[in-house]
Image (cartoon, rainbow, N blue to C red; front, side):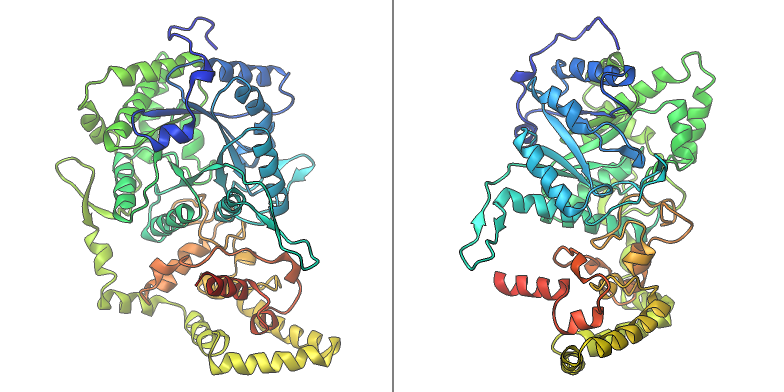
Length: 541
């Protein structure tokens, strides 16, 4: 880290809150991402990160520092340790909080801890799958996902009510004051990947996300599309543009697919390899590219930038200095340069030939696929098993139908008959569902919500509220060579014109108490999450 600072220092206590900066529009906000180290903060790498963080806290153009939570699934020093030092200096801090290592109880407990210690800004993440570490690979938790975390912390902001269990009125806990953020990844190749990401973005905003950061990418058109999509669908929250500063090793790491959800297109990778032969191994080029990305973000209308990468203090200074030196309209030229995308990549909007960015006209091929002819073509591709399951569910498991009433009557008798019959009927149910769906006997079934694909057996993160952002090109899961179930569900629903309703429902929280019990009984006797959502909807009317 540089010991001589060319930018005048500032007192962190004079910095306004991130909430205020993003809700008002006078300042183009700069956030810097800090990746914590492994081991104690007193070790060399820990001291190095701490020294950089303290220096950035004094930079007048760095408005917030964002601290990662076990990135890449690795065990790292807790973000709170570094964050506590920073907020004690008056620095605005964003704490990343992912669901891969914590169940909902631990996440709620962690929330009360963060709020008690003065942390207001939380970035809610599902998280990457754990990687091999101490004595092998840890099991991912994924009890809830990023949307579930947003919903829970939003409820904590409203004041969680606790039952006394004795019939007395519920007691409301003191409200937290979280300023919640979330991530979106629209740098995807296929429609079946991009559109579910947009649907989940809307769900995140609905459940409390007050600011958004997009995933790492190097395509100005996709950046422009994100803002235009959000305006079109009235998702009125500020967005920070992710500007990850490349190096030759980072480019190779990304291009090899080692970071879930991050794709480095071939043409940008070729440029990075060419830069490897330069005297500075491309450092000057990559810093200038980042400065140009900052200028493009400002020109497009992002509320700020989110700077990441393995950087030194002087690198941040260089990027911010270069960006400040550009002319007002230079970003338009830079936007035409930074258009690195995957082959046949899907865009929601038609291209604007004058700018090279997005127009406001929706993709004509996409609209054509939603016409009666397009729906018929998509429906023909749907598996026969899906069509049969869809029909059976509508006739038997949909509340209010004759089949549902009959099922309820049968299972009421089974419940009264005793354990032996219950076990036999449950065994018969599992014989069918294991063969058809690879059922894991969770007892709280989400098959009808994901086009009859099981999130417990076919999604490594058990996602029930939309896809994670970690898929590889072509909609492949980040673990193993299989299609993401949310991409498959999108394809199945497309033929019925229902793909835009993929996650148009209340947030799903799986009830762990039902594990190992009959999901059919829990449906007919209204003990599962479907019944809870129905009751909540009735109470809200």
